[in-house]
Image (cartoon, rainbow, N blue to C red; front, side, top):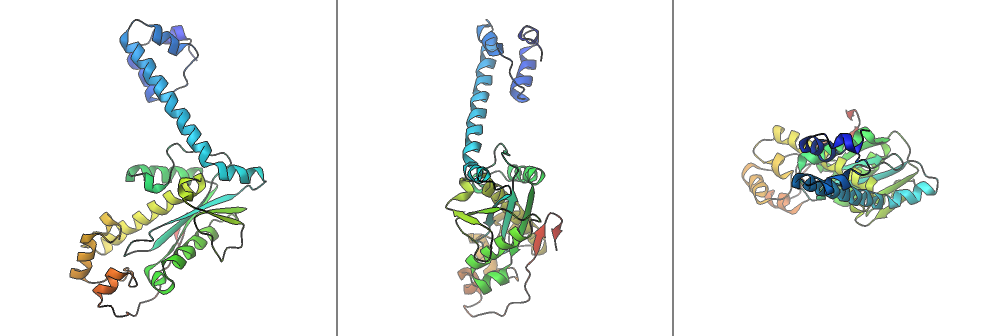
Length: 285
């Protein structure tokens, strides 16, 4: 690494690019030298670097805190800890989707959080791709509208979670879930209230479930135009409910949910064959 004296020969723009934009390690003595520099720009750069270092420390502490459940299990000798979460319990249309993710011991991803806290769709997709690259294993399972109507949304969500765990390809030593446990799962497991905000593995699963379901709803929007599925993702917005009334009920609508049932006149409807699919890294099978 160049000495502080050599670095100070560079322009402030070059130093900003190196230590703020690219976030290179800051050599000992550089901040003090910038703060002692007579140029106001140098002092401002020192403040920016210190601010960035503070944010990085805070993010590191946040991620360490999110690994507390996993760390306890790692210390007990468990190696493959799967976080599991679902997306899509509330919509009127489309499947409920669950994901499972096994993260490497001590693995961290800056910005990873409960998917509901990540408002930017592009950022969620970036995090999902980073999770897929970094995870020991990941998988996604779903339960479709017919299964939701037949089982009820809670049991269908558990079914999707079970399918995701079974699709991992690696048998987990322990399973961490958001709030629930899976009755059919024989593996050691723990449901954590608000687990997607308290466990990094569950947060990773929540991002995978959310991004997978959003992608499926965009595909269904192309198949069933005019309902706005790509925008509201099947949730009961005023425009979605009106579209159901104006255009009719689709095969992907959940007939047991009140707005759909009301659009059908409140009478039971014979549903068609199940659309349930199991998703793995290679797509549906």
